[in-house]
Length: 460
Image (cartoon, rainbow, N blue to C red):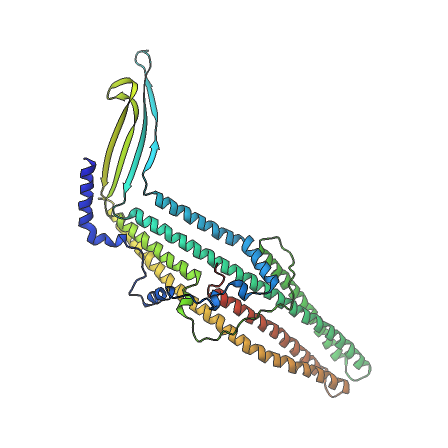
């Protein structure tokens, strides 16, 4: 069968099946019958708001010079980010391979043999052939492989951005967590000094007959309690510094972070989360590309039902022409074409197609969940930020009043009109409120950081 005839057969086959297989050649588009997906498509194509919080450069959000240096160091050294970049290199290499599959493959296979009969002189034959094979992509198998590889590149790039955003947020969260713990440690140590003085006051009052041994014992127990809590804070601080070291990809060490470090963010009051902000999230973009990859995998499974056309050519030099050995060698050329039509593999192809369709539905479900999860994360961070602002004001008032309460009860105790239990309760309540105030400030800072991350902040 000549190449011309094979081509005619391919054209006829293509014409007969075009109506049923034309979707094999289409690029991926979000399904139009899915309202959430279509809303996402419209939002993704909308004009970017450069002043939106998630679109700000991370240097505009985190302005503390020490924190800026730490984030830069983490972005340069972090192993997870380096691996994410390497995944992009892998995806690019696979895309390059998919593109090169359109080109013919060339192989050189020289061979030779010698034969001797009845102790006669060896007769040598040899060939120096070069083989060329070219698969004609009639039904889109190579096309969908290439498009799937391109979607994988985009997905890897989105994952890299997600890792980048996580690192920026992780360093910022760890930075302010260390500052918060250092503030709690300072407050605890100052409280320990105050309570140590209270023990001495109680001992003096006992000598004066104005209190009993129970008051001394109780105040001493309170003092040891605060000392015990200090050890817990020191352990937490050590762990936080080690976490920061891992983010920096260095051996564990102490980092010079001031207890006064604070994060000031602009007022962000809103009722809802615009879809265009969610569409900018790298994990959502990655989920979209995962749907595209599954779509092209389904098309590849469909293409397995249709014929494959290959053209091969061989040429070179040989000294064996039929049964005649000649020297010097002569040139030879062979040209062939093959059309392969699946017959008995239809069951396996059907099963493969059903599997890829199911995986495509899974990818779509995961995409929808990624969108909804993104919206929930933004809502949670926004609510936490707003409520932390409200709570911070309330706790500031509480601390102010409890400071006065401790002062008043100590004066009353010295006058003999208050008991040691009232003093201890006031001191304990003040310490608890101070710790809550510091924790609330950390929650506010982390809410800002998490909101920035949940909006896809930190993009290059």
